[in-house]
Length: 278
Image (cartoon, rainbow, N blue to C red; front, side, top):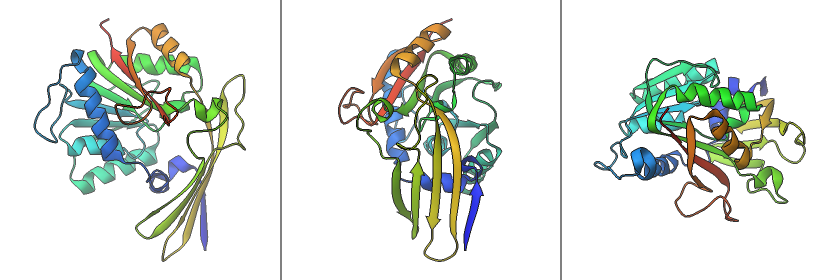
């Protein structure tokens, strides 16, 4: 029997399995290194192994989904908050935190318009989730809402798809992949050449399919069509200047310190923004 459901963001367990190839602890290691380097002027204020570093004690993950990165920060002793507009994703994040005995605040809200009664030292948006902002107005609203929650010197780390994936002759990442976990085989298709990008709006309607084939039990498949906007580095930088609350400090092409965005090996476009003084 094959159970078919629609809506990848209504199926957080299948979404997690689709992203199981990610090494979240290693990515959080990189985020902490960048905090050491760039937060509060770049002084290295490292503490004991596993402790919060770079003067960063609190983190807000936007469009967090099941909040894998927030949960990893919480494991390391940071005050973590996850924000997502999907009720199912928020419930999944709360459940994972509870089962792991971790303190995680979860906020169900739109990343363009939210209000949390506190501030943060670090904000992150991972897995190209900024692509859900389809227009310049959306992006400016998001930056303005976030700026109200970050003090001067706080960092915002944005991970985006590499521009070569949609502007280059050969993409840096595959739109189809297979992983195996806990005896199950997960087959994923997320966009690809069959989903053209509108040349005016830079929006594509990505066809998504995730199939889980367990060793025992029913096969499960989720399908969806997800509109995504592909942003260039020039557009992000221009929007940052136009909104006026941030500056771009650095960029990376991978979760290491040696791969620039322009490197042929780069597979992501990761931008480090700093909240400037009003």
